[in-house]
Length: 115
Image (cartoon, rainbow, N blue to C red; front, side, top):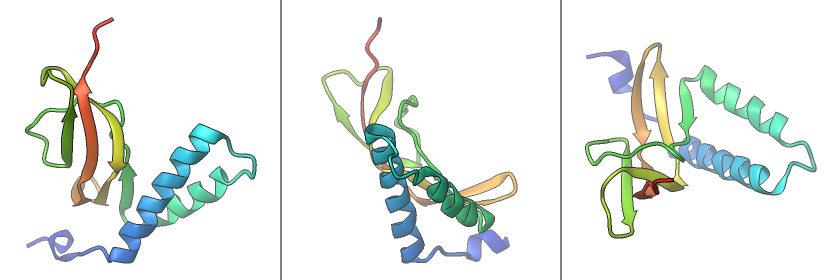
């Protein structure tokens, strides 16, 4: 059994990472008047040193076989689905090239509109 399979991430770490994600989204939408993005990047770097990363699946293709996301489908079609909203990001624990999902992403998906 690998060392990584024995590791559990404390709830507080998941709460902090989810809040970091929310703050980043708000900064992207409303601007960064207080220049907080630099502080956010420093915090994320510290979590990365512990192997924890936030993965934002916004805009990625969605297949029902994905095990790292729980999705609600909006609209009639279930073809050519794409993530249109992220309620919670995917949080992974990494160890070199190997990663383990510690929190599934909770997303809204809909059929990609053809241009």
